[in-house]
Image (cartoon, rainbow over all chains, first blue to last red; front, side):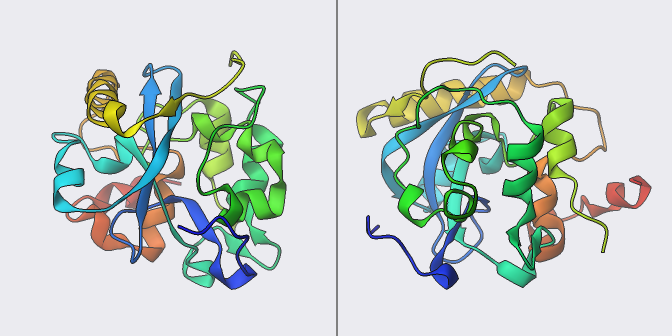
Length: 146
Length: 63
């Protein structure tokens, strides 16, 4: 994955699904059920059957964070101003780290491109499929009414 | 939610072990039968419903 900043139409979603084309795993969600915390991979991993098998019996998206090209208007969170989820995350979720995470997708991340480092300070708390989100995370995840 | 100085970095050598620990963390998370996880899961509902084969019925009861 290139370290060069990407064009707007090439930005990556940092909470994508492994089924998406060109998805890569970039973080592992550790921590505790009450306080999940992503740790960031030194090297992103391509999605393979072997990788997905590592997370059984839970969904890969409960354990790993995937990045994939932003679906833009195909996603309910995308609006005229970009990703509303990244925007709400900054507005509603408290920072959980005080330094930028060592994240390999940052140069291509839509959230970072639109929200800057403020969203990076909150990113470790995001679990794509979260059975026990905090109130703030659950509220941030609610898409705007259409 | 407490803040910590920095997020962890995971080397290739640590990946499998860290993922195993993460699976244990996920298994400890309380689940209610028949209920989909809340939070950013709803990314997938519109754009990628195939990711939730057989599980979309629960959404109908969500406000």
